[in-house]
Amino acid sequence: MTLKIWLTITVLVILVSSQTFSQNRYKDINFAAPMKIPLVLAGNFAELRSNHFHTGLDIKTNNREGYKLYAIEDGYIARINVSHWGYGLCIYVQHPNGFTSVYAHCKKFTPEVEAFVRKAQRKKEKETITLYPGAEQFPVKRGEVIGFSGNSGSSVAPHLHFEIRDTKTEEPINPLLFGFDVKDDIPPIIKGIKIYSLNGANVNGKNADLLCAAIKNSQGYHIKTKSPIVIHGEVGIAINTIDKLNEAPNKCGIYSIELYDGDTLIFQQKLEKLNFYTNRYINTYMDYLQYRYRKESYHKSFLAVNNKLEIYGQIRNKGILKFEKNEVKKMKYIVSDVYGNKSELYFDLKGETSLKKRSPLNHNPIQFNASKKNELVRKEFKAYLPQGALYDDASIQFQEYPARHNTISAVFNFNTDSVPIHKYYILKLKLSGVKPAHQNKLVIAELSKNMNRLSSKGGTMKDGWVTSKVRSFGNYAIAIDTVKPKITPLNLENKKYKIAREIRFKISDNLSGIDTYNVKIDGNWFHAFYNPKTNLLRVPFNQYNKIDSGKHKLVTTITDERKNTAVFKANIEL
Image (cartoon, rainbow, N blue to C red):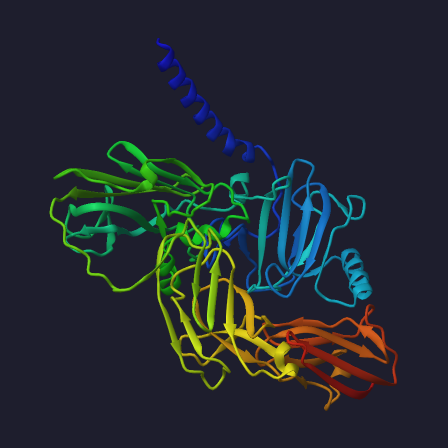
């Protein structure tokens, strides 16, 4: 045996062993289930979402709140988070084996944890808070109740969002690799492929991308179109595929995708773990437009200029395919879920010699380079994009429109919101003749496509320019927010709070959004709970909000992001 052959065999053995160990090391860890109901999933790890991969499991709770949540192993509560958005009420349990389990969207905590959180909230006179108890504060045993399932944060229906993270790196790991009792004997579903015309390539005689539906027979999936597909130039391919698990109709994500040219593996990816710092690169991993406008899951098998995801294995030529004259490539996709259920798709591509030129869409385009810093400077508009803000090179459009009824400046159409942005960039809009008292009331606002709705992006004014950081292309203008938030009491007139033991308000703001809220009774701060999804502010009376019978003075203060303040005062009697 030559040294070269021996080294090749050794490398292959190491690769196979490391891949096997990578999965086996998780299954050797015997975590308990986080809930004592059947683990039926509404969403799984690495499922495609807007601007991010899903980083855990969404476990159904029968459309109910209040199920007990259990520690999956010994450890201690290392972090507690209370937020209006994101994970809502969330508990992080650190385990001695190097992993951390995460339980998000809780309804409430255990009484001991609740008392700890309330004490910290009262000290800061603030509801939203992040706490880091030490290892001695809340030790937990395997199977111990640590909280109750709910619908808090950005959740749209009751469920448990459950994660397992590497404690050291904080990288979320696919929880299904740990052998939880989740039923899945359904292979992935393949719906089709998309072939991308790169650098003006012809696909079936046209300078355009081609969508091809897939059909299934006894041999696997095949393309439902004339075969072979004829190519001149360079192309990339994406596969439209989802997975489904037993006992639920929900569309779930894929674990592994491999693309073969004949018997040669040319593109490989595996979603074993993710990284929060690179999670937004999903916008170049998937077909952004197909997902945004049609919610279709196209997984690209070629790399953009700016793609820093660490989920890829073997790749040839960044996944870009080139063809010799009359060359026929027999292509194959193998798509797998975490349980080893597989589906295969077969299709042929053929090289062609003739080339039809692509007609330019813009005779004077502004070109942005994804590998460099980019800027666009006009008389009343400036945009400065840092290096890495774009995933690919882009042709930029720019138009100016007259001011709308809801803006105090012209409206600037900066490219299109169909092109994703990775990093925040600096946007500056000019405005003259602003009263000094109104300068801190100005915001840069993004307008909807019909330009009727405004979304505040904040901003500060200096030397006649309003400046903010934004993370998308779109329609932008300057708007002014001098309107106080609105406070509407819901149960003070009919005294229902005497029965419900709480006071409720509807609070809202016209533009910049609610920033702070404060409820005091007889000058003392009271815990108030705000749900921005329903605009409901609740003040319950309990052991944390103790109040005596009799007459009291209530003062509710709401301030928006531009520091407009509304105050509601009332005399109440309990």
